[in-house]
Image 1 (cartoon, rainbow over the protein chains, first blue to last red):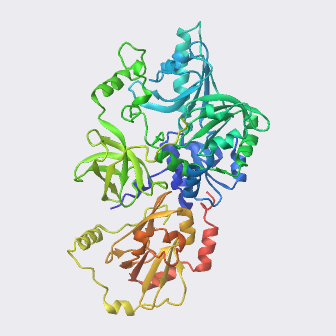
Image 2 (image 1 turned 120 degrees about the horizontal axis):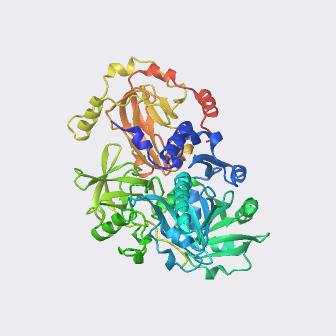
Image 3 (image 1 turned 180 degrees about the vertical axis):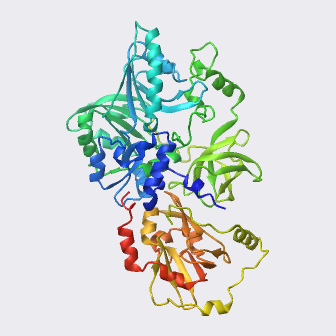
Length: 422
Length: 173
């Protein structure tokens, strides 16, 4: 009658409720492709801020192989969410893998893994991109930042994909350096470094108070800078952007300074520490994908609505190759068979795994990959994949929640207007 | 409502019955009067609690008022939607009775007793947040005509439930 496992397959770790917390966590982690042994609490990795989170009464949960804060103290997900939309919040994203690629051919090497025109990026500029498999499926999504020149790149990939990403890069880099012996690429991962996301309309004011040497009004969305931050003038890489749709920054901090600098930023009364629960609702409102849910190795960037990450200069047969190029070019030319769309659902929220039907309820046309009641809009929002032809905005569909079809329609993303500093 | 193990769900026949009720093919009937009054009374014993975090109070007619506990609403966070079985539906103790949706999660509610669903708190339709604000008062979920009032004795009393929550292994996770 009611597939409880399907319903529980909903959501994020945010779904964890008392009695089944560990069970849920185990399932979530294994679904993300992390070795199942990592589900044991004692095996979970900790970010440099673990002790700080605990001292702030964080509710720690397993996420992507790490013990991460879900929420802090008695502050509910909606309150935390709204605080980021109206003031500023700090997210510990140190679990994500930070990489540096240096050397004469660093740019060319990265362009051999992804479809983005990195050579067209000005220095100190970031772009979202994707690591692709030979079939054009997404191995991971990532932020790629060109630093001082084409010989220095900073890349951030997902914690839940550390193993897959490292295997891919290791293998590809070995081959690359064998054939580029005069200009080898050096790859290092910034293990133990901190990474903070400061997000919300007051972020710039909060951060500027700690930076004397750089005027943040000149740092636009998608740009980055090295600047000394805080009392100890710690040199950090600061990239303007983020995962919430708000103005904000991602701050990469050397290991020995991470805790002190986090405390310094968090001491601002406008700033609240924000856990994974609100992070999920914020990113979904912003229409951003969560790997393992909205993206996986079978889905191409064209299907995922990430065609914009595929450089225009790279869309011809003659342009430099990237993995899965033939499928991707064909999908750009002929349209993909399915597309990622936004949905608004009436009645109960549709969560991950809910089936999507056409307006008559007779033909199954897709599946929900993320869904929540949106705290900002007060409506049930979701994203998912539908067969092409059903993807246009306003198209009426039905979504199955607890074996009952509920009216829904295709709604453009982002669900909440972005407020990037452009 | 956080039961980890799969519990017996409503039988297919009762599901059909529910569909029939919904489509006005069958009118929900009350239990025979005799059954109401031949049963044991628990009117004075205060609320009882299930290990799925539902509460129930039972009146002298063996009609139970059911809701979720304060502990449960805190764990769920902001409730945005409540869906309950239809009046006339047969419920089994520990069986599926409805669902509560919060921003965090969709959680099932299990019936603390067996019986027939008598009525649903219509106020929750427009104000699901009553479940957070007043879980043991205005946020009641439904009323059930008990078919076996002795089952109430299998539930925890106030002190027992308090101890149960304190020993909840998932409490701090």
